[in-house]
Length: 297
Image 1 (tube, one colour):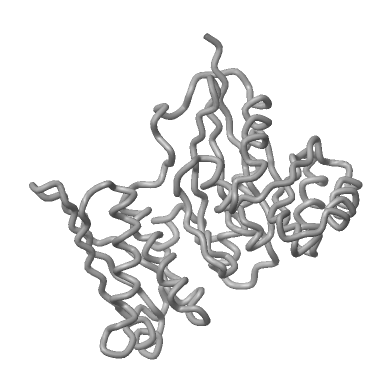
Image 2 (cartoon, one colour):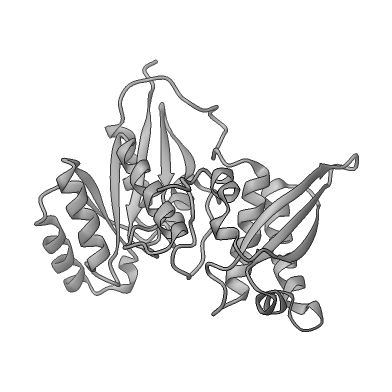
């Protein structure tokens, strides 16, 4: 039987809902989500099986005008993902509209001679008349082969989008086992989940000043897993925020992360979190190589 396989890059401005869409398409969590912009820092693959087609979804960092080294590395990773993909999907937050970041992405795709599938997300938050006007305005750019209107959060329209991707990919053998949903190692996914919970708990602070590393992963004889992680911040004042009064904040972060890890791993998880100050972690080459980002971009 003929099989198909290929890569679909999901690109868009920060907070367009790329990770939420990838999770919805795959049917399980492979990429972290938070209301903070630029939550996704590096390329994550989500793997969707659609009949005899393996759709490899490339969840990329949000594309915007970068200033700092980490931002430049994130945006470069997004464009690398798009350049290597068989299909490109431009995701636009319909509620936010056709903003400067989305226009800039479209312009660069046009300059590269790339066509794309346009997906308007969060359509449940927009009146139908405005949605149709937005679709017409964006489609006038002339690079879109298809337009889909979805709500990645509710799942509306996601199945039709998956069918489109599957039908457009080239014939070829599967590149991953059929039961695999992501290329992310468990240690890295666990660190990302804890980072997500920290972002959600710390509503206004530390979007860039915080990262998480899994230092130890020990599978126990009783089937449980012990996970030791370090949350790195840049200043002592930030450490105090993460720990919280009498340790309440770090306990809340740990409880939320542990609950999600247990659901994903389907076993009991003993999670131990430590907070350390590393002032220049965003300037350390090792951090970038560890998550597949280019330090020198």
